[in-house]
Image 1 (cartoon, rainbow, N blue to C red):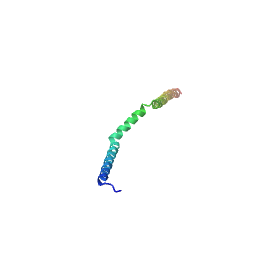
Image 2: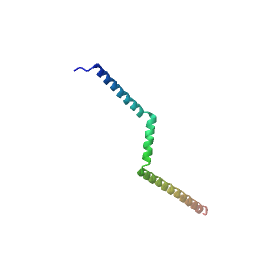
Image 3: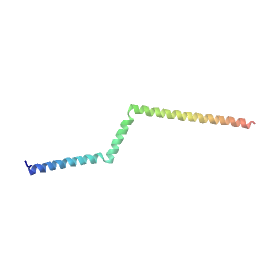
Image 4: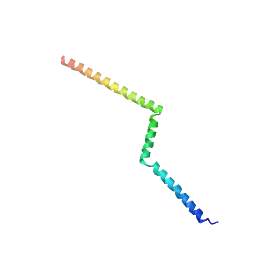
Length: 91
C-alpha cells in the first residue's frame, strides 16, 4: 500500500523537529559555560563529601606533623652546631 504524500510530509517534518531538538540539546550540553558550571557543581559536591573531608584533614595533619618535625630538627641541628663551635673555640 502506497503512503499518502501528506503522511510522508508530516513524518519528514516530525523527523526535522526531533533532529532540531536533539541538536539544540547537544549544543546546550557542549556549551563551555555549561560544562564549567557542571564541573564546578561536581567539585563542590565532591568536596562536601564527609569521607573526602576526613581524608583531606588527615593529609593536612600529616603535612603539619612533617613541617613540625623538620622545624624541630632544624633547631636541634643549629643548637648542636653552636655547641660544636664553642668546643672548637675553646681548644
